[in-house]
Length: 246
Image 1: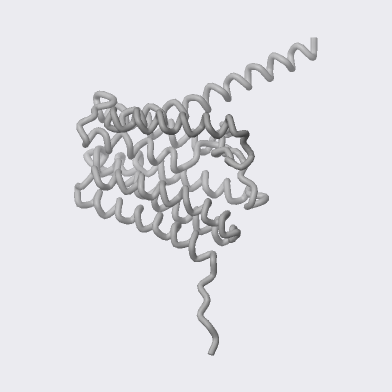
Image 2 (image 1 turned 30 degrees about the horizontal axis):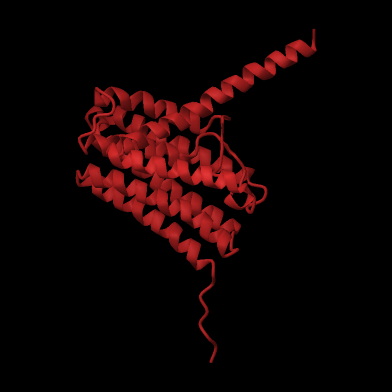
């Protein structure tokens, strides 16, 4: 009698499946008008999105199948879920135009994921992102909605912020602006590791004592840093090119 063996790849794939489930729950909750919990489940989906890759590396089961499954999960949790959420929260009153505006996050997010998949050369090597990652775009919208319904009015008026944010996030996802991946701790020096841990602790404390408001500004800073760095290198590279041709 042969033993039933569960493949190690089940571990990261389960985390990815929980990502999908969290995204689906967000959609259901948004349809019921529970926008606070709907936004929260996008954050929960982000957690599972972070750990599925880590689990794949720990179990040494990274594969093209995992990459494709992860992208499908991201379309649901970070494309459909936030698009439906912003539609239900605000854009539903604009009828078909509201549907079109809300769908931009989903459409451009799907384009970004498709581009990422065809550009992956080695699934075992994590490279910097070309364009804003779709989870960052999703949690930017989710955090704004979550904190708004938590009584933390980050930006006023509420509706005036959503439209330009959706347009900017959508364009950033399909842009060539570089965003860094998280550094691998095993390649860092002891001092660098200590510094990262201290910064993480300080940020967690700040997030706790500001009801999460600092987290929203951290995301905005991360997005803007990528934009300004891109502009800086464009100007710097052009300046060096012009100097060389004089």
